[in-house]
Image 1 (cartoon, rainbow, N blue to C red):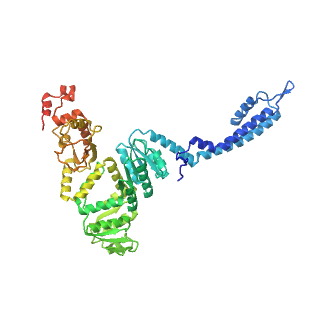
Image 2 (cartoon, rainbow, N blue to C red):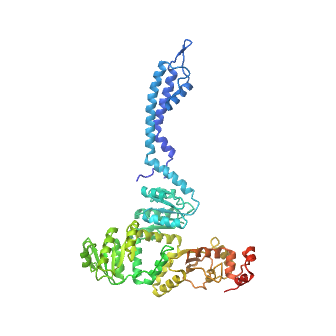
Image 3 (cartoon, helix red, strand yellow):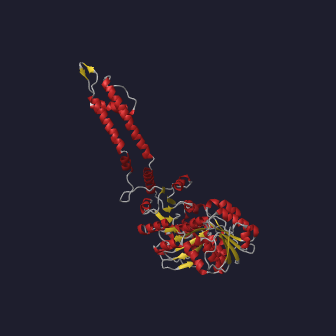
Length: 586
């Protein structure tokens, strides 16, 4: 892809100057042709009038040459031309045709010039970014992962600015049905100047998401953000441990390696199924049915494809005392490899039987080809219908085929990265709560919490959000706390419509300014200034909770039962008995 030309200062050159430089020669040629034509016409004798040959003035000659060069002409002025003048005009006509042909050819070539097109695109892109008045995320990379992230951000009402190196993918953004215009530029996101043009230092930029398929580019983006805009959170994709280590060494806080993330998920499912069910329910897309999934069994497993993912899965299975037989085209490359090895094509029935597929409890298919993965899984399930199947799906576009097969656990790198990015940026407390669940290693507690949450909120995946107790977000609650009032968590979860009822939400986590962290706090937990609450609930609960903590009338009602401030209409039309009942505590 061609790179946008820049000046030594790093700024894009002026489009006007680029056009003038390219058209300099044809314009000078036109000026020379017109000048010679006008001068020659003033010096050529015209018809004889009263015994004297007539000569054209410079103005009349310039006027005649101008309309002759641009039209078919209006006639000979101010007198009928002499043969000498007509001969000179013929010469001027052919000279101007050559000059205009050269000029127009140069102009058409300029319009097709890649540098000029990119300069115009950059100018339009910068103008669109400057006109964004809402908070926006800077997304670097618009592949499968970037597309999923943009779609999710758009559903949540956020604006995006996209940088994608592939022009075809960048052009697809104009064809997408996003609610708001998405400024997109086909450029190298690892270039710091491109990031600045995309609004990196813009006050409305609230985060950077680097999900290109090049670890070096993602590393360069994270370094640029770290140096030029330290206030912004940056989420970076890294598919190798070396790249992740480099990013971490430079201070990048949020690094997502989809292979390691999935491996940890499988290890957790084997070690602590209840915690796995709880995490799966909390991290699913809101509105999706998160039914209880089949738990991966321990025992003999067959793994197809000894690649990067395959090595990590073998370590996870080995940690949980499961014997693994690997199938791969290549011969065994690591002599210390502790498990069995079969060389060959895993879609072959004989090879699968040689690996012990009939006696196995699980199958992990990890090749880089979706067609091969489906073929292997179908063949293996024909030999053993009770297999727990873990499948790698390389491309989101094949989701119809994989949904038809219905594996027990699917590895989709783009979806894993998208979910991680959204949870980190939209609800920063969620990763900390999930990390706390991993550290607890308490199956009984996870099972209790999962049953309690699903009984209250249903099996649909909940909406997860966070709320910080400060003046801008929770003004009503903040003012009461500043006055020294004691307010407890249970009080905030009542409904402002009927204080005898609870909102359909739960507080999962509280992070305090003093560093204290409370996981699943009790109802009697006091609320403090600066607390950040992580909540999970049904879609309508978020708006109701926000009203409780931001509206003085709603908060007064749920704390004291006093709703006399509802207004004249409420007091006029609601029966007095009902109003008095609402004043009493439940």
